[in-house]
Image 1 (cartoon, rainbow, N blue to C red):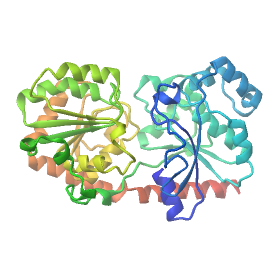
Image 2: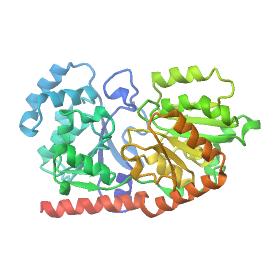
Image 3: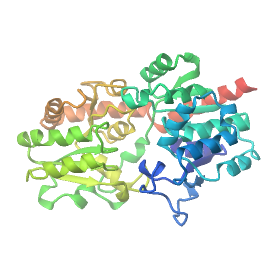
Image 4: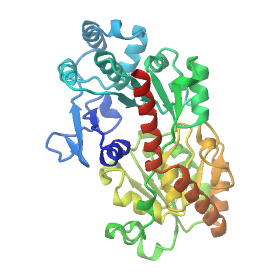
Amino acid sequence: MRIAEILKSRFNYEVKILTSNAIDFKALRSPKGKIVKKNNKFFSSVNNLEIERLSINYDKTVEQKMKNLEQFGINRMLNLPNAAIKKLLHNGPYLNNVQEHFNELEDNNYDIIHTTYYPYFNLIYALIIARKLNIPSICTPFFHFSNPRYLDSNMINVLKEFDFLIACTEIEKRKLHEILNIDYEKIHVIPMGVDPEVYNNDARKHHGFDFKTHYFQKKERNYKMILFCGYKNFEKGAISILKALPKIISKYKKIYFVFIGPSTIAFNRELSRIHKNKYIRVINLTPDNLKGYLDEKKISAFKNSDIYLMPSRSDAFGIAFLEAWAAGKPVIGANIGATPQVIRDNIDGFLVEFGNTDDICKKVLTLLKSKRLRNKFGAAGKVKVLRCFNWQKVVEQTLELYKQIEEGKN
């Protein structure tokens, strides 16, 4: 979304966003998830971007969906086995009125389609659009190669169908090359970004909202704050953090732990268990409390935090690390996947063994007890963000790729 905004406002690109009406992952395949309703003011436009939201069909069986896709000609357009298509269908979203929408798209002169997030069925829609409009297709898959779920031998073949792939790190590029056996020239490395200036403001003056004033007990506002921002599941390291809390609290009691993001049954169960410890202070916020990537609560949370902790094995990059660094904060991530190419261990943060609560506890306590080290890591990360990982630079790299593709097409 941020790339689209800058392409339109700074480079005068015409950008159309095609998406589903899902808000959370559950809604991609289940009516029990959350969706954006048509009366929502952001349904068809956000920050001057035109958005087309197609409703998700939850009624049809997989067999019925496959039959519709075959009638639509998917087998002629894509070189994918039915097993791969069925698995992607299971992940969702399967959208209503797709064929009518494709006919409408054919009336417009689009030059490129750029989609994201493997392993979801929207990748199939993007490929079909590209084939029908005869335009190049690009995918930024955010390939979590350290997560076994992403390595399914059937599903992963969908990435071969794209003309170009964008990896966030060199190691992701190498893994995509090794696993898919495709040319390096097809894979380009473009990192993620952040808007550093947003985090430069005094936390207490950002839109008049201050996280600690709003959520902490008055007598405890001088307590340290550890922040996690992401999907609260095992893969993201949220469960490991909860399991480490009693160990951390036994050594350092004046501390708050803040979790922001969609919750899970496993997280809620573990949170209920540790709440029996009267010294553990947890602030648990869901997306209902947040609206947009520039949400005032989230920005203030980063500014007020002392440590950003996300020991995940399922990150192709981790934008939240950039947000923490933009706010001048140290980070802790897991020494797995792409994270070691994002965090420089003992320079702008710490790396821990994924799932190792003793290691998490040790590194958290080291930072809690040393303001000098926190400031050192935070300052080093901030310099890195300003030099390499801001959205303006990311958009310039993306635009250069678009131009190369257009020149090659012509």
